[in-house]
Image 1 (tube, rainbow, N blue to C red):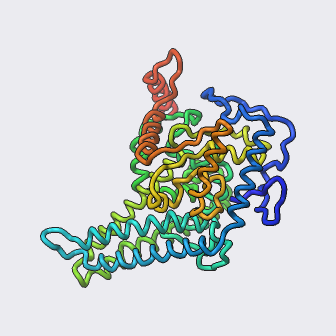
Image 2: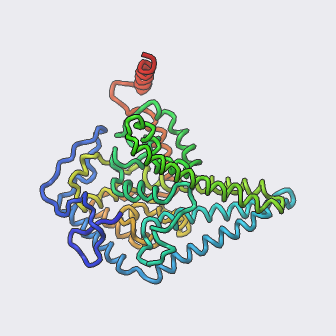
Length: 423
């Protein structure tokens, strides 16, 4: 998603029609049900818009400086990923051969293939499909042409992620990425009995993440909930999209679980090659899920009511991106392996900026936020993972209510559900 600055510049990005370009009268924010205060309430309208202007200038400076060094970076990453994948798959042809009781080719090939899949999904696929490299005018590295190594079709992913999530970041009831419909990750999300199992759903979701994302992009849950009220045209559209997902799943399964094991069969490695692909996909899924939850759900992340974005200005949109995201501290290699989504704050501010530039602007973003008394959420990977898992477990229970025990709230909800089912 790209937005237009308040004062047009020569290379201004496309205007987002839902944003007001100028700030007129101050807007009143209704308090959330949890009682949490408005995190940007201490800023005046003038301060908010000044933050927006400062970020516009920063964005323009970086976008104007894109050049051969940036192009060389993404081409090098793509080349490295492809050689790593091809080399790993070649090694896995001999994955069934044992040496002193172990299968060295299996371990080396599986590790290499896992890294290759992570690189393709994170630093390459995700960022290419955001349009970060469209300025190169390279038809092979373009958001309209890239199809990634994932069961979710790129066209559906770009709609749910680029158009919806990045527009309505952390807006309750508008951003479906807030728990993906199966997790309660904020006190202002409604609690149901289903939430009691979310520590388990969370682990299952991580292991099957590419399939969960495919179902999420397809909006399968929404379809099942309202299919009886849908028109025949809407049902036909859903079936067409579902057919795309099934075709992509079949394509991925054929490649990983049929073709490559078959190629290893003459060397006695069919079964080993199959398990290697299963493990590589599992590792990619868990890593991808871990990176994403650490950027969106750790403690300190803010959420917003739907009414708070009515008449939202560009400066307010920027603030929502900063306050609704969190970073992961780590090495350069770790940043690359996360697709630079370890700089989630910077990515949400400028999703179409080349990912290799996020580390460059991160200190400026942090300074801007600290100058305006805004919390820059960041922490090591273990710290952020623990923070998310702690929140998932805590929010599996109802919110604390003075004078009422959580156990009694759960019993009451269970009794009501039983009566509805059997009345």
